[in-house]
Amino acid sequence: MTASNTLLSPCQVGNITLKNRVVMAPLTRSRAGEERMPNDLMKQYYTQRKSAGLIITEATVISPQGCGWLNSPGIYSDAQMEAWQPITQALHETETPIFLQLWHCGRASHSSFQENNQLPVSASAIKLNADYIHTPIGKQPYEIPRALETEEIPRIVEDYRLASERAKKAGFDGVEIHAANGYLIDQFLQSKTNQRTDKYGGSIENRYRFLQEIIEAVATVFPTNKIGVRLSPNGVFNDMGSPEYRELFIYVAQQLNGYNLAYLHLLDGLGFGFHELGEPMTLSEFRKVFNGLLMGNCGYTKESADETIKSGNADLIAFGRPFISNPDLVERFANNWSLNDPADTNVLYSFEPEGYIDFPTYQETQNS
Image (cartoon, rainbow, N blue to C red; front, side):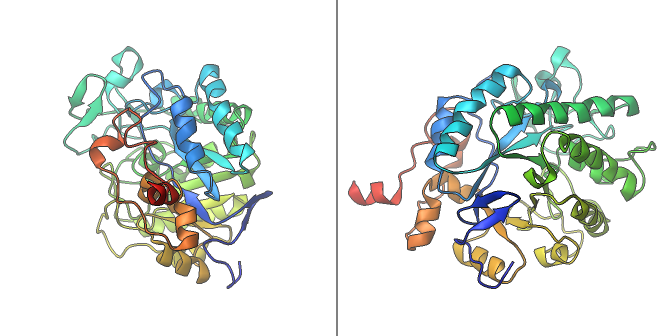
C-alpha cells in the first residue's frame, strides 16, 4: 500500500495479481431462470465486463432454504456447479479473476420459495418490516420467520462449505461471504434481528459466532487469502440498523483481521440507504483495525475512487450500477470517456437480454 497506487494500478490479492483496482460489485440480475441455472446469457454478461480487475458474481444461493429472490443463480447442485464452469473458463481466458458470492437470504424470503412451503428462517422470529416481496406467486407480504434451532445451525454452516467446494470445482478463484444487506449472516450479527439466548445470541461475541464458523468452514476449502467478506455497517436495506452498530462492526473487523482474508468489502457509501443511528462509519475507521485489503463500495465515481485509494483508506473500489450500463467501464475510466446513462430500473430484472447484455461500449457508440 503506497501513495503511488491509483484506481488503474495493479493490486495483489493473495497470489492473484489484479490488472487494476476496479472491481465489479455483486449485482443481482435475475437471469438464471426458475432452476437457478447459470447459462450462456450470463456468460455473455460477465465476459462483456472482463476488463474489471476482479469480478464478484451476483449473490448465489447456497441451498434451497437460502432462496429469496426470483431467478437468481444457485451453487447447491452439481448441475449448477457444471453450468458455472463455462463462465469461469471464459473469464480465465481473458485473465480476469472471478469470485463467487455465497448467499442465504434468511428472513428476506417467503414460504413460496421454500421446500414444502415452510417458513423462511432467521436468527429470531422477527418480521422484516417492508411493503412486500416478489415471490413465485407474485407480490406477497413478508412473513414472521422461524427462528433457527441451535442444533440446525451447523447444517447451514455445512451448506456454506459444500457451496465453496462446488465453487472451487466450478473454477472460481475465490469466494465472497455475503454478510451484508440484511441477509442471514447480517441477521445474526445485528441485535435488531438477533434476540437469541443461546451461544449465537446476546453479546457481540456470540452474534459474531455464526460468521466465524462459516469463515472457518469455508477455509477448509479455499485458503483464507481467497475468501472475502462483505459487510454493510451503515445499511438500512432489508430493515436493518442496530443501535450498537459501530461497536459491532469494529469488533467484527478486528476479528476478521486475524484471518489474512483476500479483502474486507464494505458498503461505506450511503446510496443504498442509511439507518441514521449515528454518524456513518467510514473506511478510515476500519483501516485503523483491519490491516488487510479494504474494498469500498456504493456511489463512487472514478475521481472519488482514485482519491480514496491514493489516500490509503481503500485498496479496491467496487462499482455496481456503473458496470451495468457500461460493460467497458475500465476503458472509459482509463480514457476519460463519458459513461452511458444509468439503466432503466424497469428492465434491470426483466429476466430477458434487454437491460442486461445490450449496453454499448464507447467504441460501439462512436461507430454507430
